[in-house]
Image (tube, rainbow, N blue to C red):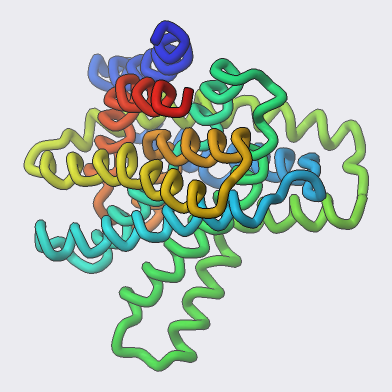
Length: 309
């Protein structure tokens, strides 16, 4: 329990700094918007590019692990999408953003350190395999669904053009694609360029968390409590339960099984808000779900850890 608190409380403190700074007028709402744009268009793309360019793609890409994790993630997206529509009457565009919250686990900021502290650095191989595909898969699914509902009634060709335009104008997706190109080609990024990227990348996570705290001042969970509760249940309970079921059915090795279940048990990541902010849909639900689910995950992740041991 103390290990989880040591990992999660610093995250809350950074979010809290951002919240208090904006709440006490020490940092403007416009500044928060600019900081979020910086993380979304520059810092996080640099982080993702470096991570994927350097990861060993040839080791431990277990189809059973990736299939179990992403089949569970896809079902959670569907559950959040239709749950938001059937139970809460949200617009289709809001449903996509809410489904994305249920889809996108915090695989890096929480998943990696919790797995490492629980089982050691040698147990992270499966986590890195999941992380390398996480953003391309989740953004690909989310953007495709959003462009389909935004262009409903149009021809298939128009929809495909809209999806392609949205995908290839997204800085995160482009950074991931470039990372794969560099990795697979064997091209070595010049040291001076890599150092510059590292400087920007190091700012990504703390800046995004600080900005998220400032955003929460603007988007309190008033009137969205039941929707946020649905997101928390799907993200923290349903997703890891599905990965447990699929992984058990395929006899996943212990390390891969733990990596899949624990990564699925993480709260929605800050990218859930970034996606909602990108389209201007369900931003209050996304921001509050990230904060509340991260808090609740102190207990739920502890319970999943006990079940895995």
